[in-house]
Image 1 (cartoon, helix red, strand yellow):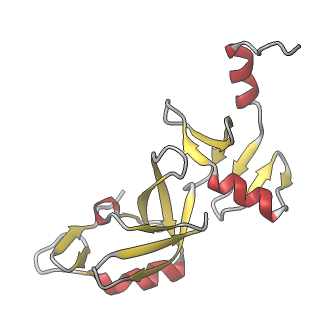
Image 2 (tube, one colour):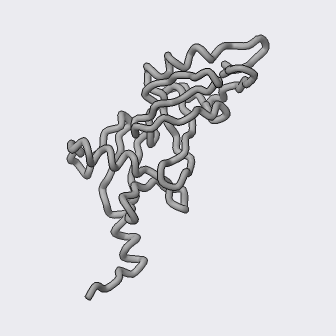
Image 3 (tube, helix red, strand yellow):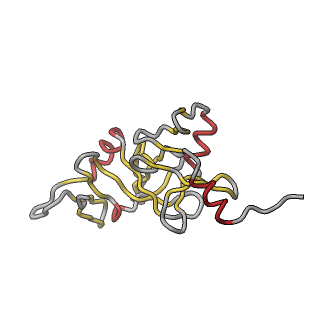
Length: 163
């Protein structure tokens, strides 16, 4: 016979997992790197946000809280189709359409945007890697009179704010 864990104990257990995602996208469990590629992929694909807005990793029906040093995801490449839509290839192996209204520039770390999580569709931040940022550059320009660079694609134009 199995006894259910009370909510307080379960919450303490979820917060006690020493899981961390480095700024470069490497997983750590305490002082040990997560080296199993399948586990690292499952952890990355399980990133989401709890109802409180705190980052979590969901594996099946269970989750634990996670420390994230920078952004939960990284954009590894960018391309456009004839629609025109700009597509982002993420390090969690998904391809998602860029919502240009979520682009922002972090002066120290470059461009970032928001993409939906796999599990609940909640907004996660994704940092553009060097390659992805240079691929996106073809749609970014300074417009006359603009205070900030602008992302322009077809009829869409979005000034990129600094955060």
